[in-house]
Image (tube, rainbow, N blue to C red):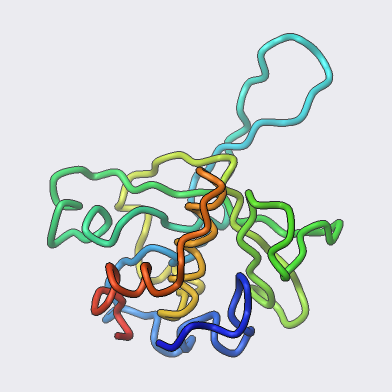
Length: 178
């Protein structure tokens, strides 16, 4: 993959894997988005009391390294997968240019054309891998989208912006569409 001509996110037509290629034959992979997954969020309160998390079932994105996710590798040793909630940006606060809102990975047109959802890295949690079945998979990132996800997540956690070539060097051949 040549060095992208954009700072953070690929164009929409290159962000997702083809929708007809996310069914039974596709392996579980970081960046996959599923519906009906239990995720936790913490409501914003202006008090000093601890806030109890809210649990709901909804959209979630799988995170982590492909080896940790794969049931054929290290994922076979632990039945849990790292996920984060995927929520609609009803207030249109998240920008797709990548400036600010580092906690968010935008997912435009995830459910319907012109809508904007985002993976919210602020609420990482784990879920039993048995929830992540192919019939619940709603989208998968393309190889280019997966590199952008890794770059954004590293930037959120460290404020370091990995170079695209570094991501490709360590991830070459791992993506299901590679």
